[in-house]
Length: 262
Image 1 (cartoon, rainbow, N blue to C red):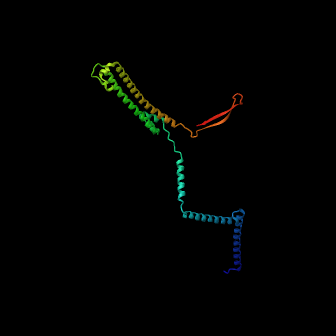
Image 2: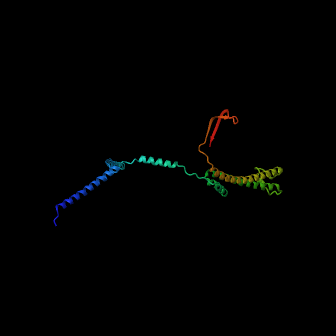
Image 3: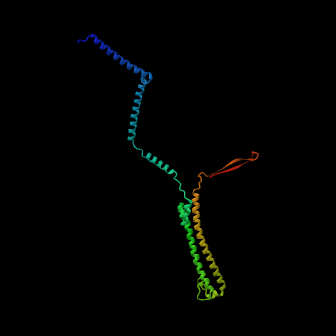
């Protein structure tokens, strides 16, 4: 079958119409983007400029980091920074430890001085134990003297000449005849000294108990006052003041006012 020239012409016209339609469609879409502000020359140019600036900043940051890495380390500056950090850490106030009064009094009752150890007042221990040692020494000494004078008093009051322990308290050169010449005087003397050392022995016992009770009271009071908040801002100011009449609400006089802050 032989194809006519008209047929070729028709095919060519159809191809041209399709190509023209695609071109118009592309131009139409581009014009629509321009109208909506999606595509314009300024935005494209700005994007290119922003990309170039970002690239330049990235390159400059890399170069600066490389220079910092290659630069020598200032050890003195690092030491100063470390010292300042340590000083700031030391300045941070530590949590204050507060003792419990009930625990302090129970510790002091069980063992003298344990309450002061619990309150962390170690400097009071020599005072407390020094008091106990002094009382123990006084109790021992007065007890021994009372025992000796009591025995001497019994001997001087007896009629047995072999009981002469009282002669140990007499001066050198004294004899039993000298004592018997003044028997009533020496009997009264030994009685008074016996009573004196007995009284001092009893007072030593009460002093021992008093030191024990004082250690208990001190531990309790110290623990109780540890919870008492005392401000670090202690100050006293003096300033003039005008005193008003409470009834007439008029100035009555001028004086000096003292204000204490604690």
